[in-house]
Image (tube, rainbow, N blue to C red; front, side, top):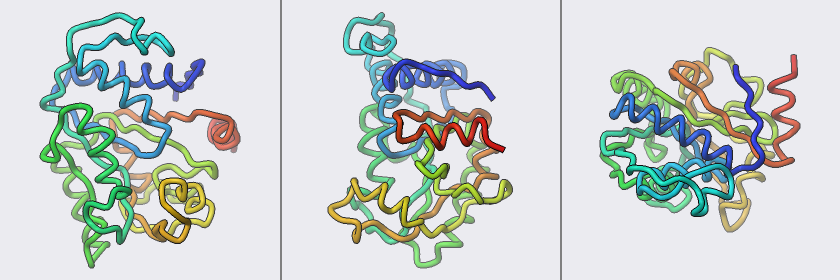
Length: 229
Protein backbone atom coordinates (compact mmCIF):
# COMPACT_ATOMS: atom_id res chain seq x y z
CA UNK A 1 0.00 0.00 0.00
CA UNK A 2 1.22 3.47 -0.90
CA UNK A 3 -0.12 6.56 0.90
CA UNK A 4 0.18 9.85 -1.00
CA UNK A 5 -0.68 13.18 0.64
CA UNK A 6 -1.52 16.03 -1.73
CA UNK A 7 -2.30 19.69 -1.02
CA UNK A 8 -5.93 19.66 -2.15
CA UNK A 9 -8.69 17.69 -3.85
CA UNK A 10 -7.78 19.01 -7.31
CA UNK A 11 -4.22 17.73 -6.96
CA UNK A 12 -5.54 14.34 -5.90
CA UNK A 13 -7.79 14.26 -8.94
CA UNK A 14 -4.87 15.13 -11.22
CA UNK A 15 -2.71 12.39 -9.73
CA UNK A 16 -5.32 9.68 -10.23
CA UNK A 17 -6.31 10.96 -13.68
CA UNK A 18 -2.67 10.68 -14.71
CA UNK A 19 -2.64 7.04 -13.56
CA UNK A 20 -5.80 6.36 -15.57
CA UNK A 21 -4.32 8.07 -18.64
CA UNK A 22 -1.21 5.90 -18.36
CA UNK A 23 -3.42 2.81 -18.08
CA UNK A 24 -5.47 3.74 -21.15
CA UNK A 25 -2.32 4.46 -23.15
CA UNK A 26 -0.96 1.06 -22.19
CA UNK A 27 -4.28 -0.80 -22.52
CA UNK A 28 -6.85 1.11 -24.62
CA UNK A 29 -9.72 -1.27 -23.78
CA UNK A 30 -9.09 -1.19 -20.02
CA UNK A 31 -11.99 -1.71 -17.62
CA UNK A 32 -12.18 1.26 -15.25
CA UNK A 33 -14.19 0.90 -12.06
CA UNK A 34 -15.76 4.18 -10.99
CA UNK A 35 -17.26 5.42 -7.74
CA UNK A 36 -19.92 8.05 -7.13
CA UNK A 37 -20.30 10.89 -4.65
CA UNK A 38 -18.52 14.22 -4.47
CA UNK A 39 -15.03 12.88 -3.68
CA UNK A 40 -14.13 11.45 -7.12
CA UNK A 41 -15.43 14.42 -9.12
CA UNK A 42 -11.96 16.04 -9.39
CA UNK A 43 -10.72 12.80 -10.97
CA UNK A 44 -13.39 12.85 -13.64
CA UNK A 45 -12.85 16.55 -14.37
CA UNK A 46 -9.11 16.04 -14.73
CA UNK A 47 -9.61 12.99 -16.94
CA UNK A 48 -12.10 14.85 -19.15
CA UNK A 49 -9.55 17.66 -19.54
CA UNK A 50 -7.07 15.14 -20.90
CA UNK A 51 -9.65 13.65 -23.25
CA UNK A 52 -10.42 17.09 -24.69
CA UNK A 53 -6.78 18.17 -24.87
CA UNK A 54 -7.19 20.94 -22.31
CA UNK A 55 -4.33 22.15 -20.10
CA UNK A 56 -3.66 19.87 -17.14
CA UNK A 57 -1.52 20.27 -14.08
CA UNK A 58 -1.48 20.20 -10.32
CA UNK A 59 -4.14 21.92 -8.24
CA UNK A 60 -5.09 25.35 -9.56
CA UNK A 61 -2.92 24.88 -12.63
CA UNK A 62 -5.68 22.66 -14.01
CA UNK A 63 -7.85 25.75 -14.42
CA UNK A 64 -5.87 26.71 -17.49
CA UNK A 65 -2.26 27.25 -16.56
CA UNK A 66 -0.97 23.71 -16.93
CA UNK A 67 0.65 21.97 -19.85
CA UNK A 68 -1.48 21.13 -22.87
CA UNK A 69 -0.98 17.79 -24.58
CA UNK A 70 -2.53 15.65 -27.28
CA UNK A 71 -6.09 14.53 -26.51
CA UNK A 72 -6.31 11.20 -24.68
CA UNK A 73 -8.13 8.57 -26.76
CA UNK A 74 -10.65 6.76 -24.52
CA UNK A 75 -12.84 5.46 -27.34
CA UNK A 76 -12.22 1.84 -26.31
CA UNK A 77 -12.31 2.42 -22.54
CA UNK A 78 -14.90 0.41 -20.62
CA UNK A 79 -16.47 1.57 -17.37
CA UNK A 80 -18.06 -0.42 -14.56
CA UNK A 81 -20.04 0.43 -11.49
CA UNK A 82 -19.15 -0.17 -7.83
CA UNK A 83 -22.67 -0.09 -6.41
CA UNK A 84 -26.29 0.77 -7.12
CA UNK A 85 -29.38 1.70 -5.15
CA UNK A 86 -32.15 -0.89 -5.01
CA UNK A 87 -35.61 0.22 -6.04
CA UNK A 88 -34.96 3.55 -7.75
CA UNK A 89 -36.74 3.55 -11.12
CA UNK A 90 -34.72 3.45 -14.32
CA UNK A 91 -33.69 6.97 -15.25
CA UNK A 92 -33.99 8.36 -11.72
CA UNK A 93 -31.41 11.18 -11.55
CA UNK A 94 -29.84 9.77 -8.37
CA UNK A 95 -29.56 6.17 -9.53
CA UNK A 96 -25.85 5.53 -9.79
CA UNK A 97 -26.23 4.51 -13.42
CA UNK A 98 -27.66 7.98 -14.14
CA UNK A 99 -25.00 9.70 -12.02
CA UNK A 100 -22.17 7.88 -13.80
CA UNK A 101 -23.67 8.65 -17.20
CA UNK A 102 -23.85 12.34 -16.26
CA UNK A 103 -20.53 12.72 -14.44
CA UNK A 104 -18.29 10.21 -16.22
CA UNK A 105 -19.58 8.87 -19.53
CA UNK A 106 -20.89 12.08 -21.07
CA UNK A 107 -17.82 14.23 -20.23
CA UNK A 108 -15.56 11.51 -21.64
CA UNK A 109 -17.66 11.09 -24.79
CA UNK A 110 -18.56 7.48 -23.96
CA UNK A 111 -21.88 5.74 -24.47
CA UNK A 112 -23.78 3.34 -22.22
CA UNK A 113 -22.60 0.57 -24.55
CA UNK A 114 -19.23 0.79 -22.77
CA UNK A 115 -20.81 0.46 -19.31
CA UNK A 116 -21.31 -2.48 -16.94
CA UNK A 117 -23.46 -2.22 -13.82
CA UNK A 118 -25.91 -4.16 -11.65
CA UNK A 119 -29.65 -3.71 -12.16
CA UNK A 120 -31.21 -2.38 -8.97
CA UNK A 121 -34.72 -2.53 -10.44
CA UNK A 122 -34.78 -6.32 -10.80
CA UNK A 123 -37.34 -8.22 -8.69
CA UNK A 124 -34.69 -10.87 -8.01
CA UNK A 125 -31.79 -8.86 -6.57
CA UNK A 126 -29.59 -11.86 -5.61
CA UNK A 127 -29.78 -13.01 -9.24
CA UNK A 128 -28.83 -9.51 -10.41
CA UNK A 129 -25.81 -9.60 -8.09
CA UNK A 130 -24.68 -12.99 -9.41
CA UNK A 131 -25.09 -11.84 -13.01
CA UNK A 132 -22.98 -8.75 -12.38
CA UNK A 133 -20.21 -10.86 -10.85
CA UNK A 134 -20.29 -13.03 -13.98
CA UNK A 135 -20.19 -9.97 -16.26
CA UNK A 136 -17.10 -8.63 -14.50
CA UNK A 137 -15.30 -11.94 -14.91
CA UNK A 138 -16.34 -12.23 -18.55
CA UNK A 139 -14.99 -8.70 -19.14
CA UNK A 140 -11.58 -9.82 -17.88
CA UNK A 141 -11.72 -8.14 -14.48
CA UNK A 142 -11.28 -4.54 -13.40
CA UNK A 143 -7.96 -2.93 -14.32
CA UNK A 144 -8.23 0.07 -12.00
CA UNK A 145 -10.93 0.67 -9.39
CA UNK A 146 -11.58 4.13 -7.97
CA UNK A 147 -12.78 4.05 -4.36
CA UNK A 148 -13.94 6.52 -1.76
CA UNK A 149 -14.44 6.01 1.95
CA UNK A 150 -17.42 6.92 4.11
CA UNK A 151 -17.28 8.84 7.35
CA UNK A 152 -17.77 5.54 9.18
CA UNK A 153 -15.15 3.77 7.07
CA UNK A 154 -17.40 2.02 4.56
CA UNK A 155 -15.93 1.28 1.12
CA UNK A 156 -18.47 0.80 -1.61
CA UNK A 157 -21.32 -0.01 0.74
CA UNK A 158 -19.26 -2.50 2.70
CA UNK A 159 -19.32 -1.49 6.36
CA UNK A 160 -16.11 -1.95 8.39
CA UNK A 161 -17.32 -5.34 9.67
CA UNK A 162 -17.75 -6.78 6.15
CA UNK A 163 -16.00 -10.03 5.28
CA UNK A 164 -12.84 -9.77 3.20
CA UNK A 165 -14.25 -12.63 1.11
CA UNK A 166 -17.62 -10.95 0.44
CA UNK A 167 -18.97 -10.81 -3.10
CA UNK A 168 -21.48 -8.57 -4.87
CA UNK A 169 -24.63 -8.63 -2.75
CA UNK A 170 -27.55 -6.62 -1.36
CA UNK A 171 -26.84 -4.53 1.74
CA UNK A 172 -29.02 -2.51 4.11
CA UNK A 173 -27.78 1.06 4.48
CA UNK A 174 -26.93 2.19 8.00
CA UNK A 175 -28.71 5.27 9.37
CA UNK A 176 -25.41 7.19 9.18
CA UNK A 177 -24.89 6.33 5.51
CA UNK A 178 -28.46 7.31 4.66
CA UNK A 179 -27.97 10.63 6.43
CA UNK A 180 -24.69 11.20 4.57
CA UNK A 181 -26.41 10.53 1.23
CA UNK A 182 -29.53 12.58 1.98
CA UNK A 183 -27.81 15.66 0.51
CA UNK A 184 -28.34 14.16 -2.94
CA UNK A 185 -32.12 13.81 -2.40
CA UNK A 186 -34.92 16.20 -1.47
CA UNK A 187 -35.32 14.54 1.92
CA UNK A 188 -33.98 11.68 4.03
CA UNK A 189 -37.21 9.76 3.40
CA UNK A 190 -36.33 9.53 -0.31
CA UNK A 191 -32.98 7.82 0.29
CA UNK A 192 -33.28 4.09 -0.47
CA UNK A 193 -32.75 1.61 2.36
CA UNK A 194 -30.93 -1.01 0.28
CA UNK A 195 -28.11 -1.14 -2.26
CA UNK A 196 -26.24 -3.60 -4.42
CA UNK A 197 -22.52 -3.35 -3.76
CA UNK A 198 -19.44 -5.15 -4.94
CA UNK A 199 -18.07 -7.09 -1.97
CA UNK A 200 -14.61 -6.62 -0.52
CA UNK A 201 -13.51 -9.87 -2.15
CA UNK A 202 -14.77 -8.62 -5.52
CA UNK A 203 -13.09 -5.24 -5.10
CA UNK A 204 -9.77 -6.81 -4.13
CA UNK A 205 -9.67 -8.70 -7.44
CA UNK A 206 -9.08 -5.44 -9.32
CA UNK A 207 -5.51 -5.15 -10.60
CA UNK A 208 -5.07 -1.68 -9.12
CA UNK A 209 -7.04 0.04 -6.35
CA UNK A 210 -7.00 3.81 -5.79
CA UNK A 211 -8.81 5.30 -2.79
CA UNK A 212 -9.26 9.07 -2.60
CA UNK A 213 -10.34 10.82 0.60
CA UNK A 214 -10.53 14.58 1.08
CA UNK A 215 -11.55 16.98 3.81
CA UNK A 216 -11.62 16.86 7.61
CA UNK A 217 -14.81 14.80 7.61
CA UNK A 218 -12.88 11.80 6.32
CA UNK A 219 -9.79 12.23 8.53
CA UNK A 220 -10.89 9.86 11.29
CA UNK A 221 -11.89 7.12 8.85
CA UNK A 222 -8.60 7.42 6.96
CA UNK A 223 -6.57 7.35 10.17
CA UNK A 224 -8.38 4.21 11.33
CA UNK A 225 -7.85 2.57 7.93
CA UNK A 226 -4.14 3.36 7.67
CA UNK A 227 -3.05 3.24 11.29
CA UNK A 228 -5.73 1.14 12.98
CA UNK A 229 -5.47 -2.49 14.08
